[in-house]
Every structure is written in structure tokens, then in C-alpha cells.
Image (cartoon, rainbow, N blue to C red; front, top):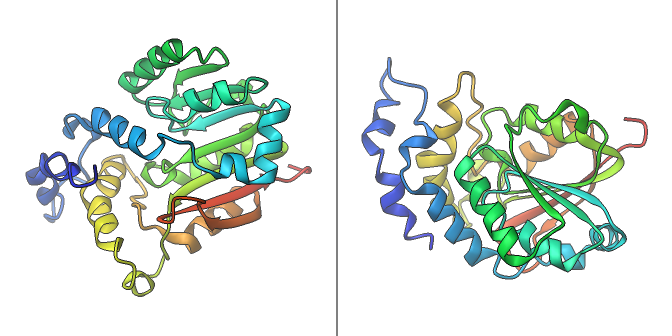
Length: 256
């Protein structure tokens, strides 16, 4: 599946090259990557054919979902994760947020086919979530979606805002250091740096003042940004069963 991304990433190659020119554009828009939504859907189905194990193996997460939590997935894509979580945890209420109308439509169709009646999907900008979602969610998840955001700091602040006091946030992202030298020994680093250059960074930089973090933003930067958003460390571990990724589990303090 990762190899199949090569033609897709190279589609807007000339647009990407122009970004390196002194007076070139800041980045390449998401719309230039024809077929990306379909590819991302297929990739997610391959990766999440079985749910990431931390949903069942991280005690705090499992207890939340079993007891009946209000959950939102930020950058849910076509709902691969939520449409599997819903039937497994029928006491919980799940919401998915994505800016792509194509992805949201697909997610809703799949939810209906799979009988995921406790799952709802919304077409929202993750940096501008509804005002009335303040302190509304017991649990927020973000599966490899934060580093792609144009304004990741704003999105993390929004996540903190919509969490209930003592609510939890699970962020899954690439297992990497923020220091280039520390990643040299990792055999998959070249692949993630290439992805980062040719899609993640440039899509973010297309927006005015976009952060352009990229997939290799790394553990140190991620933890600093999570703390800056008012979230407290619980654990950071290699994602169980998925050793190329970290699972960051943070919580909102009772005083926030």
C-alpha cells in the first residue's frame, strides 16, 4: 500500500518543485493530489482491518469506552476506526470530524451498512469546532491527523477546549524523534521523510502561515505542543501491534 502512493505523490511534482523557487507558492493544495481520498481510505482499511490494540489494552481507554463515553475522532477520514469502534462499544457515542465532504459522505454510508447506529459524522474544520462543544467529550482521538494540520497548535487547543475536565486524548502519530540525527538508524525514516516533503508539509504550507510540521515532527515537539495546549502527560508508548507509531495518551486537568 505504501508503494502505491508513489504515483499519487508525484502527480503534482511540478507544483512542488515551484515551491522551492524564491517567489514560488508556499505549498501545494490538497486538491492537487487527485485520488488521495480513495487511496487514504484503502490504506486505512489495510492498517485498521483490526482496531489498534490500545483501545482494548490500555486500561483507562478500555474502561472509558466500556462504561459509555462521548467520543470524537479528529480527522476521521472515511470513518474506518469509528465504524468499528461503534459496534464494539455500544454504550458509547461516537462522532467523527473531517474537512473532506467526500470522506464524510463515505463514512456515513459505511456506518449505515455496518449498523453503526451510535456513530455520527460531521464536515468541520478541526481548527474551528462548534462553540457548543465546550467541555463535551470524555475522550478524543486523532489517528495520524495532527501533523497534517495547517494550524496544529490551534487544533490541539480546540481538542483541549472540547474535552471535559479529566477527559482523555489519544494521539497516534509516527514514531520519530524531532532530531534528524536520532532518526538515521530507523529503516523507515526515509519513507516518512519523503511522504512528509511530498504531501504532509506542502499541504499544510499551502495555507497562510501554515505550520508545515510534517510526519517527522517527532516526539519532543509533539509532547511540547500537547503540554502547551493545557493537556497533562499520562503515557507515551509504541502503539501496541503497530511499532512504527507512538500512542500519546494525555488528559485535561480537572481545573481547566
